[in-house]
Image 1 (cartoon, rainbow over the protein chains, first blue to last red):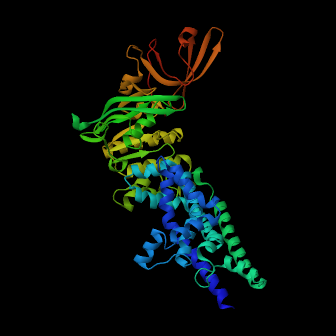
Image 2: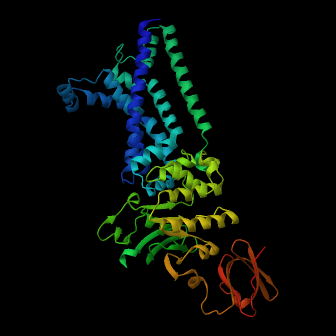
Length: 226
Length: 295
C-alpha cells in the first residue's frame, strides 16, 4: 500500500486521539463547572463553548491564524520563548481541533451531570466526602453513557475535521495533511480511486462510532428510575 | 446547658408551590433526643432538615451544635455539610447506583470495615442483597439500605426525611425498632420528619410541629397531641380518612396507627374545621376500657 496513504491515515488518527485525550481532561472540569455553577455570566460562557457548532470553520480558522501569526504578540511570544510556530504545523492544527471539538465533548458531559438527581451529590457531602471524592466516585461513574457519547462524538468529529485544518494547517504531507484534506486534494487531481479509499475509511469509522453511541445509550436506560 | 443543646434560630425565605413562605424557627433541641418534625407538606420540615445539614444556607440566624457554631450569619460562618458529622437520609434514598449495597455502606464509613458493614446489613435483613445494585431492590429494601448507610457514618446528628414512608405495616414496626435501637446505640441526636402519628408516639421523645413556616406546638407527643383539657379514659389519635354525611349526622372514619379503624358520629357543629386528612383526637370517658393481651 502507498506509504503516503498510510501516513495520512496515521496522522488523521493521531490528531483525533490527541484531540480527544486533551478534551476529556479539559472537558470534565469545564462540564462540572457549567452543570453546577451559579455564576451570573454562565450563559455567556456556555454560548462561547457552543460557538464552534454554529460558526463556519473558516471564521475560527481565520482568528486562529491571526493569533498564531508572528506579527501578533502571542505568536511572537511563542516564537521567541519556545521557538514554536503554530501556523501550518501539527501543533497548530491540534489546538484548533481542540477548540473546534470542544462543544462535542462538553455538552454530553454537562447534560449527563445535570440529569443526575442533586440528592446524589448531597448524600455524598453529608456522608463527609469532599467535592473531589464525590466527583470521581459518585458523579463520573454514574454518567458513563454520557462519557462514552462525548468521547465517540469528539473522536468522530475530529476525524471528519476539514475546514479548520485546511485554514490553519494547509495540506502538508506528514504534518497537516489529514484524510479529509487528502480526499479534497485527490479529487482536485482527478485521482478518484485514492479519494474513494479515504472516503470509504472515514465513512466506515464514523458509522461504527455512531452505532456504538446509539447502542450504548439504548442499553443504559435512564437510570433516574432508580 | 449550652453544651447539651442544639440551638436553632434562623430565617429562610422558601419558594414553595403555593408561593413564598418565610420559615422562622427559634427553638432548641436537647442533644441525645429523638425529635419528630410534624406538619403538613410544604410547611418547611424538609427545609429545616436541610438547613441543619448545611445543604441550605439560611438567610440569617444561628445554628449551634453544643458550643460548635455551624452557622452564624452575623459572623459569616457556614460550616460545610462535610464538616458537620451528620447523616442525612433522603426521601428519594439517594443510593449511589454505581455501587452495590455493600459498597454504599463502605463508602459511608469513616473507617472502612467490611466486617462492620456486613453486620449492619445483617441487622437490617439485607445480607442477601449485599452484592446487588440499588436498581435491583424494591422500594422498601432501598429505604432500609438508605437508613443503614446513614447509620454507617456514625453521626452525631442523624437527620431522617420520612424514613419509613415506603414500608408496609410490619416492616415499619420492625424498622421503628431499628431506628430506636440505633438512636440509643449511637447516642446520636435524631431528627425525623414524620406524618405518622403512630410513629411519632412510638419513637419521639420530643415533637416540633411546623405550621406554615412557623414552629407551633412543642413538647412530648402526649403534650402536643393529647388535649390536656380532656380527661377522657380513652384517647386515641388518628387521621380522618373519610367523612360521610347521613341525614343530620356525619360518620367520620378515623384511621389510627396503620390499620385501626374507628367510626365516630359527629354533628354538623362538631364538623367545623374538620376535613379529610386532619389529625384528630378521639376520646371517650363514659365507660371503663378493659385490657387483654392478644393471642
